[in-house]
Image (cartoon, rainbow, N blue to C red; front, side, top):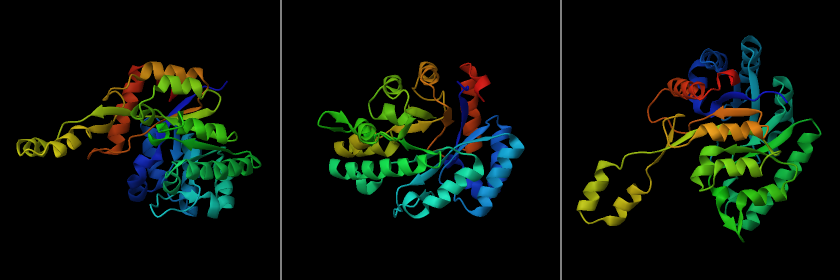
Length: 289
């Protein structure tokens, strides 16, 4: 079995891609010591695809996966849709030597209820079959909403059962945020998971104005602030104990472990990535970069 590789989820670098261009951004990623990247929310224009390809060749960098949506949504996001851009997605994969494509989240329209979820599973499983004809596997990335229960089952488990052709990219921050145990979920999804997201989870400070609202007798406003202090964090700066989690990921055959931080709170993303890299090295994973 090939050794797993630690990389970067490019979503957190989308402004750098705009500012510096794809090649220079990936050059900086390489200089930080990361040699794999997952492309997400980066427009796959011919120019960007060419620059990404040149970077992979010059810096010996893997493209872990490309990102897609099932169909276009008003929310945007910059990823091509399987509905409108299927052939282009396949060609981009061939150009960049990629065999994994991932759906970043359950489409908003399919979050309404179990029936709409099942509509998504039928579409996703069909696209997964079509992609397999081109030697490409389709994966699904979770958030916390997949830990809602329908008839006693996690939504994530329903997607797993209804989509036998689909693989999973387990976002371990969102697993914990959904109230599940990342180690347990990695074990349950062994054999279906080639990608994971590594990001930490911290509790921030209660805003000062919340205490003013409390003094004014507005308990509900204070309680809302009190219960919404969760922040995304650099690895090692939050509450997640990643050593046993990563050991379980390696044990279950994960191919890529991708560092991601959804919100940076004013910090430069390269600095955040450097801090997360340093923590992973401290944990003993320098050989996975």
